[in-house]
Amino acid sequence: MIRVVRRVVVAPAVVLLAVLLWLTLPWWLVVAAAVSLRLPGRWRALRLAWVVVLYLSIEAVMLAVLLGLWLASGFGRRIRTPYFEGIHYDLVQGVMWVFFREAKRVLKLTIETDGPSPDAHPGRPILVACRHAGPGDSFTLVHALMHWYGREPRVVLKDTLAWDPMIDVVLRRVPARFISPSPGAGEDLESQIAALASDLDENDAFVIFPEGGNFTPARRQRAIDRLRRIGMERMAQRAEAMTNVLAPRPGGFLAALDAAPEADVVLVAHTGLDHLLTVGDLWRELPMDKRIVMRWWTVPRDEIPAGREERIEWLFDWWQRIDDWIEAYDAAPAGPPSPTSRK
Image (cartoon, rainbow, N blue to C red; front, side, top):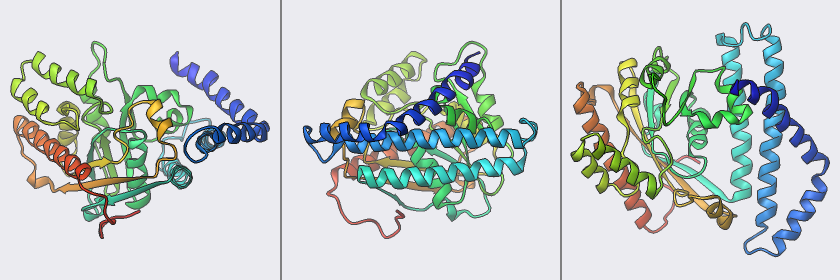
């Protein structure tokens, strides 16, 4: 029923809103410019207005294209075949390129990757475990995997993102899973994740965020309390020692490891926008003039322990390493881009 509401009510509403926005765009631009003159910063309201217009326009155009693909596939009968799946991945890559190009220009953002990259393992599938913090980090990661490294991501993401009509439609036509951070009774999330991670080919990248949500101090404390509540005191103490990340929830990641025994592992940390925790934080920072750095580590499969408990220790070790990297990076003065970075 909820999906019907999203498709029948929310999706048409988004298209209508985009059309109305373009019809009244001169008025909105005048208002945004006038407001910007009264605000600190450089054309803050005008920049934000353009990003909103761009995103709604992309959303409306994509929904129309996706409807056309549904019709062309025989009213959805062939929509999940490899041919149409490839078309959808190409569409996502194109949308990401357009949106990130404009967002970086308008918001004054620079995105760099540093360290060994996923293309260090050509011909092998990868499991990507990423730190979760700051606005849009999942989109930034997917953009990097597709645009820079030529990977087709299979993403595990929160079910709340399905309220975005474009994301809802696209990710139900390619391998992906919407999951609830608080699953109900009888919901076997690990089996769903294992199914998604199965049968990866050489250009696939399975993507998961083991923390289960964006970092906030309150969520960090809840994660520590949860570990103590289930009797994992030593892991709770390790989580307390990590001040920039949440304690990872290993279940889904371990399920993916078991389901994809041929895949290497890539771990990703990033910093630059992680202090932006609220909408108010985002508003005050516009334009951002920020450098987002994504740090990649690759771990060959034969370096990963075989036992479950050993793998949990291994994952916590890596999360401690990510925490240390964030701490060191934030404390260091800004310098020139790394010679191995890509923009």
